[in-house]
Length: 143
Image (tube, rainbow, N blue to C red):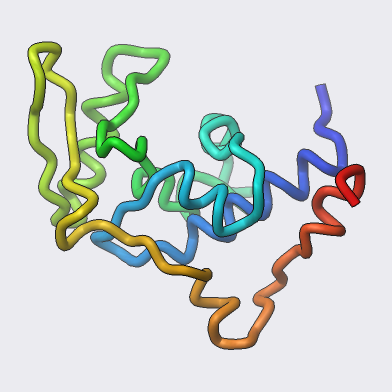
């Protein structure tokens, strides 16, 4: 089923924001939502990130692994190896991933050196738009 123009613009905004997270840094789904404005469907956008490098945004150019839960927990995936793969990708960037709790959850200390929580995206802070989509364009039904 094809995405609506609104969903396509939202997914693109998520992917562009995630591309700005520096190597070795991690942020939360909620913070990406905050940076792009109001919507909290960042996890869904990343879940549907294409694998095909023929797409504008795909696993090869959007560092999906740098976004986790606000608690620092690496979220469980649909398949059993997904969480371990997520942790491995972060460890490959030098991020410290620990095991916490009785359930063996994988965790990153977001308050430490690996947390990334700017007030605005670097592309916006520099005064550039970087192809950024305004909220009015992205969410016309809200305005």
